[in-house]
Length: 241
Image (cartoon, rainbow, N blue to C red; front, side):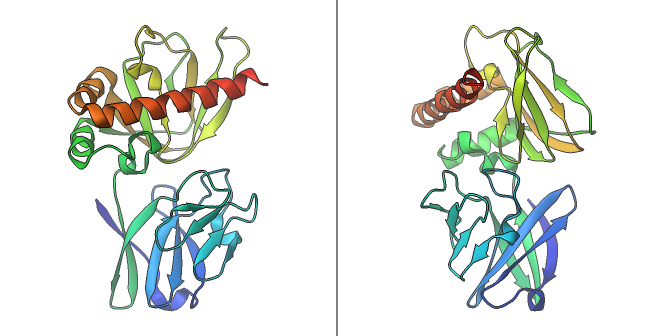
């Protein structure tokens, strides 16, 4: 867990908010509510929209693009929002605001409901790797050995079952891809993943990840249920195009 200085408390308006770009391509939103300060991802989890351009009344943050809302004290989704905000631990020291950045594994929706012990074991499996803009992580037809979690940067995920007419989307922090590594009878990739900018990823071996989940059946069930929803959403949306 790394400690990052963001700003002075005087820079944040009372019951207001402001965003900052920090090293590694991370955008952090700092919000004030009374005597407290909160830190969240600065980009809407729905689309690439800066949350600082939205509406904030000291309690609820609303993205101006599609009116997704969140409780500023917890980051939990409200109303139309379908995903929570990633929350960072805040430290205020001598009038300066710091955030403690944790592993992207904790931000991943796929693993959000696993037990604390299982999350720690998965974190030990994760290999943190840096890739330059333009790097291809894998291609259609490559082996499905590992899955990935995006920590910073952007990755383009192109699906093309026939390898000739791919359709895709852009992934952001905490999103999991390469999930075929967790599936039976999926020995080869049906997609291509490419870094659109310098990116940092967590890479987990699929076989070892499954062993950890099998040792905690309750957590394993939750992960697989979310995985089925993830696959249906992504592959289903491509079929509609």
